[in-house]
Length: 507
Image (cartoon, rainbow, N blue to C red; front, side, top):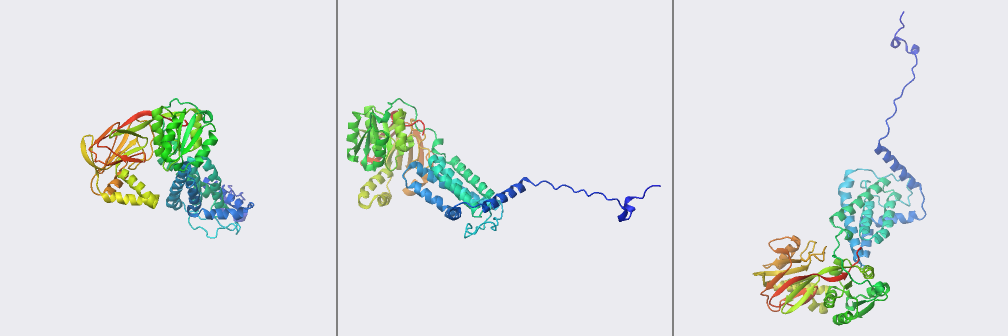
């Protein structure tokens, strides 16, 4: 007799079978990260750090809208150090890109609620709680972007800014505004923004060396044999003092602008190397003396623009002193002009037309109304004249608003360039703005077109020699900021690798 099926038996007679429960699936990686994020947040909320409750909320509020970083950038800019100014600009540019990315993509892509504040002490909480998405942290992104951008230009300044940036990031968790994961993601995006800016605008150490080839010059330990002439009119007493401390055996001669050439000629008679501290005009004068006497030149920037020194890579006394003591130097080109029986030279730029007239008018008015207002008055007077220069350029008569020639090729966009990556390429960077009505519009259009392009208003070529004739009497020409009258004809050429200049091999 077969037993009855189990299902047909009454419930109380059916055999008991132990229940079998299926195991729960393991939590996903995302869920585990979220749980860890919350755990760390609660641990931070429960932790008591001496003084943090008073300091970190204020620090967090100071970074609202990038105000903290803007104030630091302004402080760096007013130091007068070119490296500090570059660090400030790069830091703000990185911050701007990071902020734009966070607000347009980051917070709209990931919608995450802000942390609950039940476990955060009231003294830490912000008075005005943010209402945007918690992920990622915009404050952390801005802090990381600014600090990374500054560090790319100056490691020393970056080391000073980094702890403050880290404190701002920590403050966002401490005040309950963000989870730790939001802060880490924001910091990563901020650092990425700084890297992106560097990809668009290389830092100084990424640019090719502006000096070549290397040449032999005397090494001058402690500055022995160096005579440095300092143009006091350029406002350089601090650099003169620094030079005396770094090179105690160097001879430092201070003088005013009108005696500069005389003192340079005297110094050349007793120096193993000639030095100059001043602006581009002072450097131009010293280069002429060094060329005539066959001496190497040591340049310390002390003027307003200092194009040649900065393109060479010299920004402060320590860099120059390192090169002088080691005997590190390069050969650079010298531009020359021959006009009216006179031969002159330029290390940076030469120009005819609007710019020389602008310089002359500015000098005429600066003593009456001051430097800044003199720029405005000069521009208004030159623009009102509305007459282009008539000249024969390479055998063809042309009306020109501006003829510009750079000593070597300028790489940046703009009418008169910005920086040079090579100071010995053997070329003149020539640009011309054609004549016609509306000089202001033509100059702006040429500037926007760029240095190595052609447009209806603008021509740009690179040549080794240029001849210009048919120049009207009294036409001014400018070279390295100095202004004089041009003769009826003019020829430009290059003295290729003609000047030896001290420059450290590594910056």
